[in-house]
Image (cartoon, rainbow, N blue to C red; front, side, top):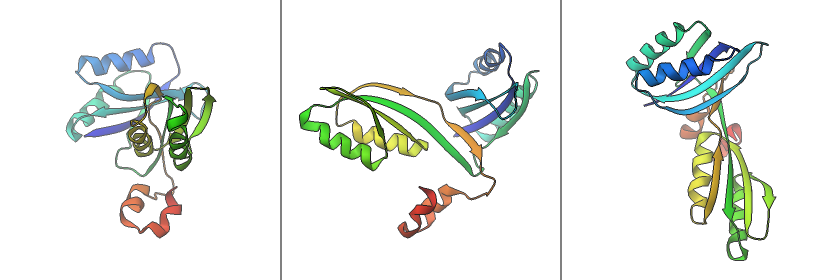
Length: 178
């Protein structure tokens, strides 16, 4: 199972290296990684996605806490969160397929950030499911390059679980989670 960990660390050189070495020594692969400044000066937030069962992830969290620069670790996998990723997709877009690509882009609220005679670059921001879905639809055209960020995530203070809403409410309430 994939787990999303939110890790607050002191913003100092070598922190990310120590964390990645910890994962490597234990044979873990990090599926997704995003790092940036947090809400307080001198603190960074690392959001990572790793695979493992609950017991293994608990042990990994204990190991993370042993690193001096780690201030707080939270497994947000089952907690209602706002999750986002960004993807840039360069796609071959000639006259024969350009309109269908632009139609898909419009449906997913993607932005065209570069255009030429033969290519488009789309910027798509959204939850991981949205990113996956547009990638699958665009595979019918020739994708030239992809650059993708790691997942970022913040816990919802409202405790509203949008995944529950998506899966259990009728389409009439879709505006609640768009």
